[in-house]
Image 1 (cartoon, rainbow, N blue to C red):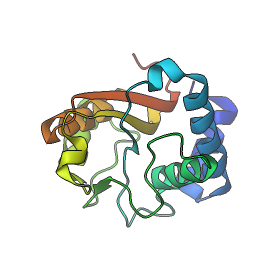
Image 2 (image 1 turned 30 degrees about the horizontal axis):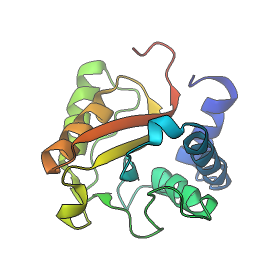
Image 3 (image 1 turned 90 degrees about the horizontal axis):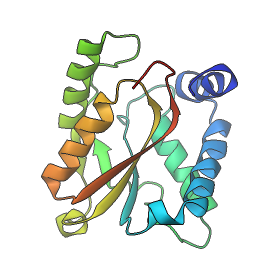
Image 4 (image 1 turned 90 degrees about the vertical axis):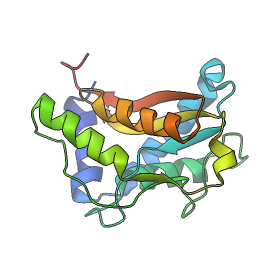
Length: 169
């Protein structure tokens, strides 16, 4: 749940740029993948829900994914190497934090529209993607990004988050 110490640590990474937390969250991601072989079966790409390159103080999702790549020393999982993320956000969009549900939905649609697949289009055609994000609030953003990935050619998109807001469904 996105509460207490976990909420505090995610905020320290996301809003204060304390990048050491990215390493810990990256380790958690790899640990989850190692212990959930059945859910990882058939996953072709593990990608983060991207932030814009100008995101300040840090591109926190990319930092987590880079840390996960470093942690996966045997290259057991289909993570992109640092600097070669397959899904990128080409423009800054309105943030959805502290917004109403309708505003979150609108921001999610705008966010997804700003994303593009940087790899070879044949890489995503028919692929199963594990989409990683930090916090699940309404589910709007994961849903819109999944729809974008499906429109790009992915056959299946699965979601994984670090934390879920307690009241979210």
